[in-house]
Length: 240
Image (cartoon, rainbow, N blue to C red):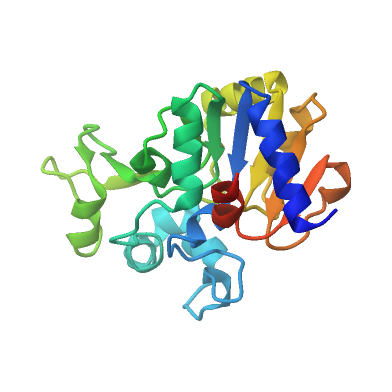
């Protein structure tokens, strides 16, 4: 099947469904200029005192908070980013009543910025930060412009609402994700190499026969998909 034929097939599938679920990874945000963890230019290739897995771990946050926040500000807070064609198309489908949920591994809030309402953030969000002592909320701007370890007016340390290495996923969000995927007519998986677990294992709950994988590179699940499109997630969705 040619690329154009695959786009036409995807167009037909989307037109015929009102129960679509989208599951996305880093590739959805890289097209907005957010660095990817595992690409050639991603965080894993850059030289820091410790590897990214440690810098973004619960252990580092607890034991070396200054190092943690320096890395966090440098690498995870990306000012000025805007939603791309993929974010906008998904928001449009939700508005049209076709898309039931966006399940994302990203922490940048771009789906909501594009207008999506039902977004399940598996790994949390950099836009939410809370004092560990009193629970007061702080936005990403506050963290960006703070120095050293950000502290609340009450003196408590402020923690980003992101799931760090060694921390478990939010079980409510995980369970809701499983429910949406298991009940979906169409499951579109985009911008993810499906190597990060437990998130990648969520697609095992899909029971339908319209599993669509859209990614620039091959994934270990391509053989299970009903339609595989190799390319930019933004360009593919925008063409539908």
